[in-house]
Structures are given as C-alpha cells and as structure tokens.
Figure: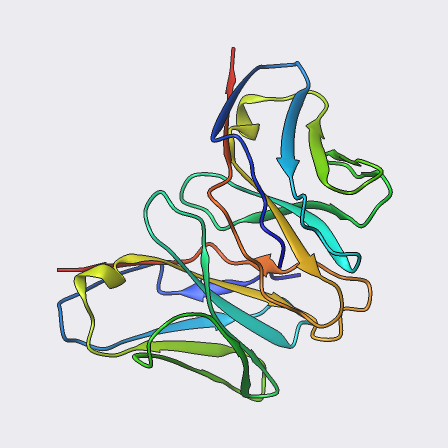
Length: 115
Length: 111
C-alpha cells in the first residue's frame, strides 16, 4: 500500500521563475493538504483540496495556487518565486469524512531552493 | 485550533523511557491531541492521538490529564532511531481540518 508520494524530491529555481510540485495521496484518501516548512521551523499550512476545490487556506499570498485532479492527486504552483520561498514543501493526505479522526499522512516533501 | 507549548529540547539515554510533555490549556471539548515526529530530511510521521482517554499503540503511549490541559507522550524504550523533533498538535474533530504545528521538542537519544 503506497503512502503519500511527492515529486520531485529536490528542485532548484531562480527568483521570478514559476514552479509546480506534485503529490499523489495515500490509497483511499481523497483530501490533500500542502504545507511549507522553512529551515528550523514547523510546517505551516498552505491550503487543502477536496473534490477538486480549495476548502481551506492558510496565510499565504495568491502566488501560491493549487489544483486537484479527479484521481485525487494534486499540484502546488508557486509564481514569481522569492528567495524566501526556499523551503521543504510537504503534502499530506487524509479521508475528508474522517469520522474516526484519522490522521493526516505526510510525504517526504520536495526541497525547493531559490537562487 | 488550540495553541500548544513544548520544551524545545530533551535528552534520553537509549533503553530508557522518553517522556515528552505538552501543555494545551486552551483545548476545546471537540479537539483531539495528536503527536507526530519528524526525523531529519523526512516528512512528519504520525505517532498517536487521543481525546480524553489514555491511548497506546505499537509506537508509544499517550497520557492525557483529566482536565485535558496537558498530555505526555511516552516512548517506553527509546532507541537511537527515535532521535527526532516531536510535535504535539490539537485539532478539531470532524472533517479533515488543518494541522497547526509549533516548533516541537527535539529529542536526542544517546548511548
């Protein structure tokens, strides 16, 4: 049973460029959440997708956008990259109707470096 | 979601029990306590969660005080592979709401 998978594992971009990160959720999960983790900090919630719509959003600018596909996989897009966008980007999945409060499961992230 | 407070770091000798405390004095009645850990260069790994009763699984035990204002994660026999940052999170029940991470406790297990 595959867990959450993310690609690529590492990425280097320059300021002003655009980037797309990808996530495949754990089997049986229909909800995908994205988090940004700066060095030495805990992960910060970016947004969550369910039924191909953004359901919750954290305090991130519109440069951060996303998409969810019918197979529940998801993409995170970041435009006009800034040096401060350098971070580990984590994807987590869970069932939306978590009546048993099932935990979110995380992938190992994409390490994005901005030069 | 309620805010949590954890010590920034702790040490534990290998083979001994590691007891990691967490304060969540503003927790609401519908909020669960979750524990995750993050080993260097990996994503957060789910450990255990509970509402008001003590919980145990193959990884750890979770002790929640009767007033639910604090909890303790117990790793009964710590090994070097348990060295990680441990996060205590409170989260509302229901639909898959977001997780709000603090800075966690860095546990160093030593020989």
